[in-house]
Amino acid sequence: RGPWAQGRGFSAAPPAKRDEEAVATEAAPPAKREEEAVATGGTTQPAVQPGDAVGAPLRDEVAEPIEQILMRSHRTEVIARVGPRAERYLPTEDPNAFLLPDSRLDPGERTWQKVFVALPWMVFACMLSVPLLLVRTNLPFLQKRAEEDRRAAEAREAALASSSRVPEFEVLSFWQVPDVLERPFPTLLCLFDPETFASALVLPLLRDLEAALRAAGVRVAVAALDLTASPAPPEGFAWQYPRATSPHLQLIVPRAKDGEAGVVDYEGRISAVAFAQAADQLAGERSPEVPLEDLRRMEGRLQELREALFDLAFLEDAPAQRSWRGAAKARAEAEAARAQALRAVDISAGLEVALASCKEQLAKLQARAR
Image (cartoon, rainbow, N blue to C red; front, side):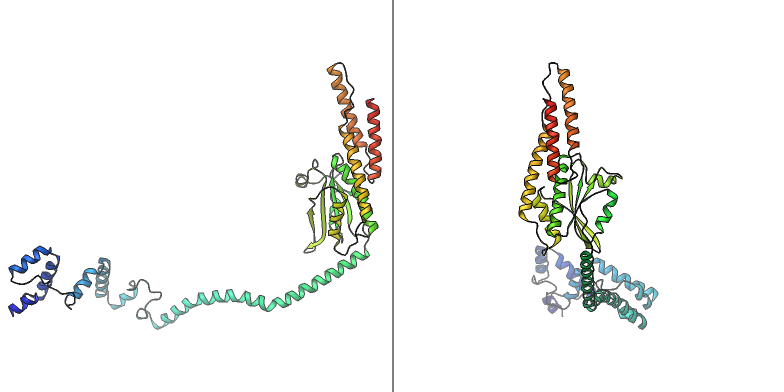
C-alpha cells in the first residue's frame, strides 16, 4: 500500500493528519514542494487535485467568512445550551428574508404574519382608489349642478342688470367703495388727489366719458374716489395707492369669483380712446361702442387742457428785482399765487369747463406778472 499511496500523494497517516499535511503542502512555496517531492521519491503533483472530493469541503471552509463561522458556532452553542426552542428568538439564517420562517412560528402566528404584511398594502390601495372612484361617479352630477348654478346666476344677473339703472358719475369717499363693489354691472373707478397734475386731467375726462357711455348705451358705471376725503383710507390702502402718484384707475368686475367682485388695476395710457376700450371690454362683446367722433373731440380737449395746465404750473412770472432778497420774495409770492391758481381750476365738470377755468386762471396769473 505504501508505493501506491505515495504515487497518489497520500501518506499512511490518519485522515486528520493527512488534511494538515495537505494544507501545509499547498501553503509551501513551489521550490520547497519540489524538494520535498524529490526527497520522498515522488513528483510535484499536489496533495489534493482540484477535482477531488476531499479538497472541496476544505476550500469551502477556507473561503467562508469568519463572521459566518462565528455566527454558526454561536447558534449551535445556544441551541445546545437552551434547546431547540431558542432558535425561535435567534436571527434568521438568511438576512434578506422578508418574513420569518414558518418553522419558528405557531400556526396562528403564521396567519397573522401574512395578514399584517398584506393589510397595509390593501389600505393603501383603498385610499388611492376610493377618491378616484368618488370623483368618477359624482363628476357628472357635480358638472350638471355647476352648470345649473351658472345659468341661474346669469339669469339673476341679467334680470337685475336690466331692472337697475346705471348711476351717474359721482365722487365717493373710501367708506362708499363697498357699495360700488356690490353693483351688478362693471365700474371704472378712479382714485385721485385733486392736488396732483394728472388728476386734474383725468377727472374731467372721466366725466365726459361717462356721459358718452351713457349716451351710447354702454352699461358701465364710472366713479371717482377722493383720497383726501374724510374718513381717510387705512394706512395699508394708502401705502398701496399713494396720493402722490395718483390717479389710479381700477376696473371692477361684478361677481368675478364665488359671488365676489374682482378688481383689476388699469395699466394703460391716459386717453379717451384707451378708457373707452377698457369700458367696452368690461361691458362685453355685444355692448355698443362710443362714436369715434366723440372720442376724438375729447382727445383734442384733453390735449388743450394738458397744455394749459402745464403753462399754469410752470410759467415764470416773477419780474426781475435789483436785490437778491427782493427776487427771492417775489419768487415765493409767485409760487404761492401759482399754487392757488392750480387749486382754483374747476375740475368738478367736464373738459370744457376745466379748460375754460384753467385759461381764466392763466390770464389772471399773466396779468399779475405784468
